[in-house]
Length: 480
Image 1 (cartoon, helix red, strand yellow):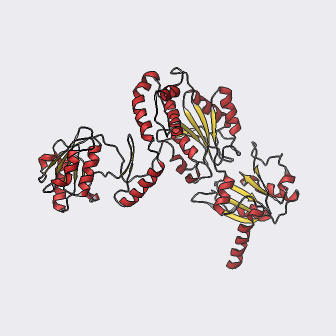
Image 2 (cartoon, helix red, strand yellow; image 1 turned 90 degrees about the horizontal axis):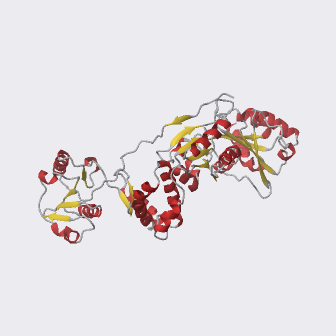
Image 3 (cartoon, helix red, strand yellow; image 1 turned 90 degrees about the vertical axis):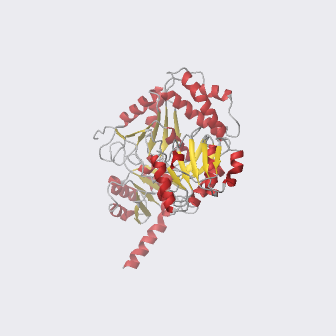
């Protein structure tokens, strides 16, 4: 085996239309020019953020009278006159609802000259920034932007989020703000504080229906002293490739990780769901190619956890199916490192779901058997139960079969499996570049050789695949 040294990969993010940011406005001057419902809403929102709002309402100051008399938080001053460039001096932000395009351009120029980012309501090309749609569970705030293209879509997203985001999350957010300074006095290392906040998050969601109290802080803090707590390891199944097949628990683990060790089978879309600050380390194994040794992976996982990191060991498919999970679990247990497991959608499940058939059928396939196409030496394992493989009422799924498929088929047929048994080879299951071939078992090795080189391949053998084989035969007859 060619040795492969783990290489860190810097975090990447896809291009974004606008940069989301949260602006602190408490006690700062903000100008709103214009008299409209849109201007009124902006003034109310700015007051809620604690700003000192100056509204230049021309001849319609009455529109703002109720808000000025009873502001949400920051004061609202309304003057019944037109704006002037001098009004923008010292402003943190500037808003205007101006229908005259020339006047709007003049306002933009004046605001920028005064150093104030500007927003012209409903005129996106003139804006330095946009507010988007807000879900308010302050201090937990979610802002949704469609870059000005579809405000109603943003509002519909807000409605969906509000329907599932408990109001109680606000109380836990306020508790976090109050506890943070005290936590820094009690726990001095960043890794241990991060561990605290990970446990805080899980505790908050478990108790979301009630307000937090002092007992919660002490319970979460526990009795350990700073510098004595070890990290942890989470084995996470990344599924067959489609990021949307990740479980919610897997996503939460990725968001909690400080370090992620991932296999070659893990797609970039899955890594995109991890927290941005997490260090990413590729520790992949390539069949018959450069690979990290399992011993090196075990050692690195343990060393990182002992250093206080929250380590996510991210494996393609399900980590408990041909993922060498036992070796990594045993290494952690031997070092006293706690391990949890988050299962994933297996390659077999992903392939069958993508092609639209079941792996079991009441009259044709009463059991499923998973076998590996190669052992530690890269050859077909010698201890395969061939009579079980020859069972016509079983669905057989073969993992990592590329180099040994012909030998596997020959031995299965010799053991009594009918060479006309339906079979499918699927490459890159559930991914955008998914490809598959369907054939009888006897013809499958030649067909599977046409699949893209280097792609992960899964073989499904049994009556459950008969529909794909029949469809292939029909297409061939039609083409002829």
